[in-house]
Length: 342
Image (cartoon, rainbow, N blue to C red):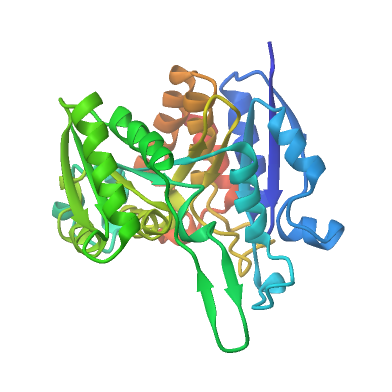
């Protein structure tokens, strides 16, 4: 039976790279019916909002959502009354109950020299950032006057418990919980609840606590010491982008946003790259790897997911390089290289 997937190309390079992912999904034999909807800045232009009720409802009734990228200077504004493309992302996560964001970071040997870190530092790195996605400062009450602004950071025990379980379940041996418990009350609650879940449900997994500033430094100094990084919304947003650079390009990192049994959203970590939109130069590999995460986490098709990931690694090992990786291959050439090894 074919699975129903909503595709959200979004803005910038989004429409260019999502086509690459669909080509690869078709080639790997996944039976999927696609339903494309406008989203982000494109939706603002058409409907005055980044996420319409109709699009959200369609996503709720799908088996998965494949999202490319949103945003661009056209919609940048500091006016709180005007819509922003990023509001579509927050609305989608909240509307689908997607509280867990998984971002795997595993530098590929063929790209070690593209990393800003020495290869001996990144060799053997294989970590996953597990980020809480619907709480914290991004979703707290906001106020704004001409001279004062505030963003309320709130976490509940329930929110921390459920993301902690995702983090411990994802780990084979070790979880590093990241917070700012020396300053923030939300982080003190975070640390207490993570300890409780660890002791009662996952005692065989090693647990360490790190302050977020120490974690940021350690990600650069000793990235292979991490297996699973468990953290709250804003810290996870920042640390996962930092970790992405271990691979040499943010254009290489996929992600999955998951909830309690409903459709997940699968998207690359990178943005919409409006400076290269329409040039055909975009790197589609993170989008393709996000499609592989959809196969694995959305549909349980581990063999097909592994085949896609292997094809990407083989293409890179045989010399594929897009401009962000120091080469000249365009989007179509990169897609065809993956299809060749698939």
